[in-house]
View 1 (cartoon, rainbow, N blue to C red):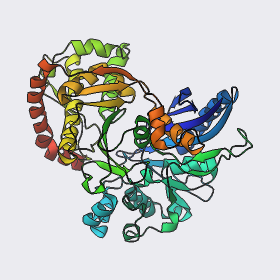
View 2: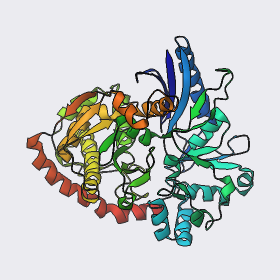
View 3: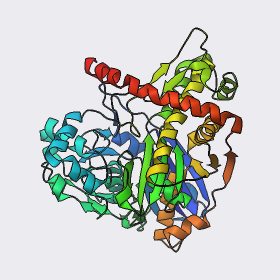
View 4: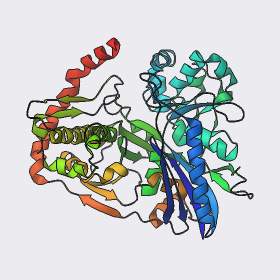
Length: 496
């Protein structure tokens, strides 16, 4: 039986899977990897390690598929973004610099001064923040490693590196280039008005391609001697949007390390700068992401530091949830563990427990984390309701963190929305497979593909009416916490 293969590289692990012509996903493989923290505020990845693991899993899935049929195409989904600097052979000259990285703050301020925030807003439809928009790390590398920069043939994202390994081509799809800080997301081209003003040579920029286009044939003779087409693929949340069949004026939630509410629109003029805005996989549609950086990571941190050492599995979450009531016994939590994106955009912000007292227990702190993350999501949802005029009674939720029933219930109560947890959480892999499958004729179009593929609701969570008033009052208190601490965060960052 014929299959296409999708590769999905997230911020903490790599998934590879295959999909047949009926849209059934299988042969899933997963391997984790670790982020690197060489200095305070620096976050990197080992590119060669990631390629090695990706290649191993691709080979494993490939051989499983070939035992029963053939591989027709491959596509890619990756987190966004990570700056890479490659020589002519595609060899990395430096570790990949993650979007969480804070080292390019000076470059970000300089770009705002030289280019002007009005032009940046007009062209990119985004605010400029160090690390998150890769023009800042591009200039940091140029300023701090001029010898290596001179040897750089192409700069790009993680996808640029992986696609070169697969095909020998240096490209970047437009969902990825949207977060570069120098791409015109309405007109689909690199902005010379920006890159020329900051001194970036356009020769070092990869060609920007349609995510669903075939960029070349697979250059891995150990797997196949015939030309297997490789499709460019897209950023992971864009792939998820495609897999869920989200269209204009619809929204979904993705829950992993971060927690994101994504809106689809065909009106680029209304994109809100408090969000992350990018091109959709399908041309002339745009995605606006209200992205909290560390909700899932906050829960994982609490588990690793306070529960796992005592021998508990994550099944303990259900027991802790029952041991503390709404309001977490007076404890509040800010989930800004290493800065925050939407809605506050403050790299200096940090995680905080407020209201701890002598009767506070672990259950209270755990519930405070779930509630704090949910309150932050409500702030994002209020922007969506007012700016995008989007009032929905329900929305789908995907990702490993979506299946945390206790957290989902609190979110339903805080937002007063029905949340439908989807069965397939590997929507990055699925979206990549849909692009690959459409490119080789499995589906007539990207839009029709999502309609043909079923992603059943695993379970639904409805708001508990008796909790709504309680959480409305608590939310008003929560909103005062960050403004009260903003000056403290700034002072603390300067002193440290």
